[in-house]
Structure formats: C-alpha cells, structure tokens
Image (cartoon, rainbow, N blue to C red):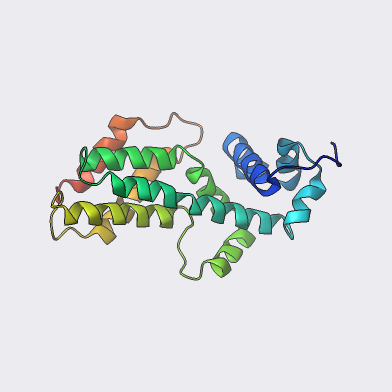
Length: 195
C-alpha cells in the first residue's frame, strides 16, 4: 500500500470504503484493515484521523445519520403533491435501500459503538432510524396541516410504526429487497385510519 500518497477528503473516503465493506459483507467483516484496504491506503491513515476503530465507527454512524436531513427536506417539500402513501413509500425505499439497514446491524453488533453513540447522542434512540422517524413525523405533520391526513392523526406514533414496519422486509441482507408495491401496501395499511 502506498503510504506517501495524500488522500483527498480522507475521512469521506474512509467512510465510503466502510460503507462498501458493510454493504458487501456485513458487520462481521468491518475491520480497520478491511476499511483501509477498500480505501486503498495504509492502515495508519485511519488512526491519523480517529483515535481508534470504534471512534471511527461512531463518526461513520453519526455522519450517515446526518445525511437524512437532506432526505427530510426533500420529503417535506413533497407535501401536497402526489399521494401521501406514494411519497412515504418513495422515502422509505430510498432510506432502506441505502446503508441504513446495515448501520442498524452494525450498531446492534458492537457494544462499544452503542456506548459511544449514547455519549454522543444523549437523547438516545437508534441512529439512522431515529432520524428517519423524525423525517417521517415532519412530513406527516406537513400533510396534516394541509388536510391530506386526518387532523387528529398521531404523527409521533405513525412515524415509528411506518419505520419499523418498512424496515422489517429490508432486514434480510441476503434476500431480494422489497419493491414499491410491497412497501406501498405496508404504508397504505398503516395510513388507512388517517387518510
């Protein structure tokens, strides 16, 4: 491995490499050696930017959770257009076809990572899924304000219900991910009482 080559955006390249390893081989395969090999750099590069591997993983998870803010803005902007169930289905497919499902497995797999995430996020919740539930709740609030779902819809209960129900079919990394129709069926069933 070349050690004298300067990486551009080393943190970003290491995060992207970790994501590829995680998606391809799961949390068991995610080691500092696997990440640096995937990134094409010396192992010491990771330790130049992070105190240890769990510190790296903590920053990776927080970075990927923060990316949901962009998805949230786009989803909220879609309020009042299309159908509520269609917009939510698109958002859930986008969320769960990304690294989100693998991040949940990673956090569940590593005790030290969970401990560090609790320190970094005192409010708690499982990173990525917590942000996703907040995204869905914000969207449902916007649709409720527009009168497209019932005025008494409990968006704070509907949001995690949608996240949990949609997450389940995606959780099998080996199987075929669900398609629009199957996710839409879940979303429509959950929204049936409020739309």
